[in-house]
Amino acid sequence: MAIIETNHLSKKYGNVMRVDDLRLRVPEGAIYGFLGPNGAGKSTTLKMILGLARPTAGDITVFGTPMTRRNRLTILKQIGSLIESPSYYGHLTGEENLRIVQTMRGVPAQHIREVLEIVRLADQKDKRVAHYSLGMKQRLGLAAALLGYPRLLILDEPTNGLDPAGIQEMRALIKTLPERFGMTVVVSSHLLSEIDQMADHVGIIREGELVYQDTLAALHSRSAHHLALRTTDNRQVQRLLRGQRMAVSLENEWLILPLLSDDDTMALCRLLTGEGIGLLRLEEREKSLEDIFLELTGRAVSL
Image 1 (cartoon, rainbow, N blue to C red):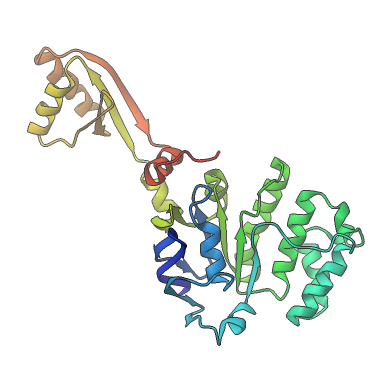
Image 2 (cartoon, rainbow, N blue to C red):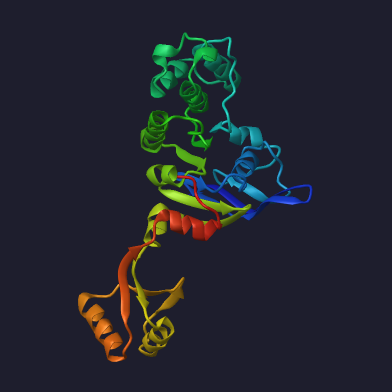
């Protein structure tokens, strides 16, 4: 079952199309990484799913139910979210901030103690939030999103501004949620390395358009090994190999071939020598995820 489905979802601000014909499919129980450069439309998409922005076109289905103005609040009761920076009252303690959210959401008071334990803030619950570190504030925002143990958790750039230790802690915490509580988690990021270490499904957005959506394993499979070959006459080699029905392409003065066995590689070298073509370099390569991201988005990825 898809927890979230969008069809032809679009959002236009003035003459600028921020999200264009988006078709998301978020499987139940997944950690779905929503990946793209800054300004690609990630936050706008998540805001539309949460009813914080009205779509220009298209529709949204959550938990198998089309979202409308009439049922939006009923659906949102089953969703926890942390969009952009967490909101809090700095003069109140962490526990007091959660008490306000707990009262508004109508969930049991015992959840406050439980979520503080989950995000490891139980020892800091009586401290004013104004004195929290940035990482502690992020964890408090996550605790507020976890109140009521929602079926769906939506996190927008949850590691933004955190130091390496805070990023690792937040990532480890998010990874436990589906198995521990049966939640489906959507986490957006412009950090490919974060999504790679956290998610099992991924959607990549570029300038408001979804350019890739599948499992993370399928994305990794696109980084297949191949051979890169440079010779004294690349054009002639390309004609020779195509004549032998071998897939070959020319990229930046390199011939790109499928990975060959040792015997086939030796046969290739003998063929070039027999034709009087010099072999300058032969390399085995594998595309990195960063290379694939760049191909899909046309922009460099933050590491």
